[in-house]
Image (cartoon, rainbow, N blue to C red; front, top):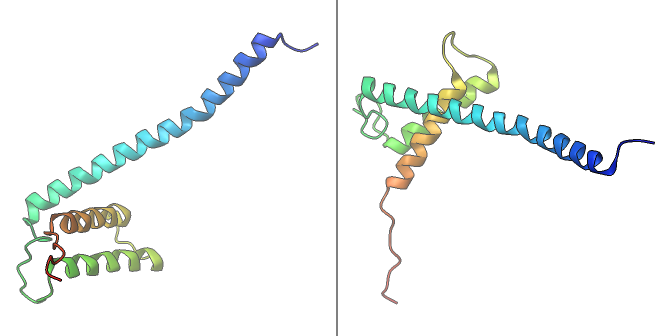
Length: 117
């Protein structure tokens, strides 16, 4: 006999909604996590100054972007080798460095194409 037709439609909608809810909570969790990375970047910037964008160059003479690339390589190396330091979140640091790198690239002046033939 089954359920009346209107009930079956309602049941389908409920199932569809319940399938969406976990995704929404995943996005909410991701947003919370990204906000924690923003707070981490702000704390580190306050503590270290603008060391990513304006390094002191005591030992290394490479530019800011190359230094960030090197830090990103180090974090990826730790992840690949499974060698994390206790109390350090390599994934958070990696995302932070990638965000700083993107910010640095966005801040670079764009070169205009030459108008001379």
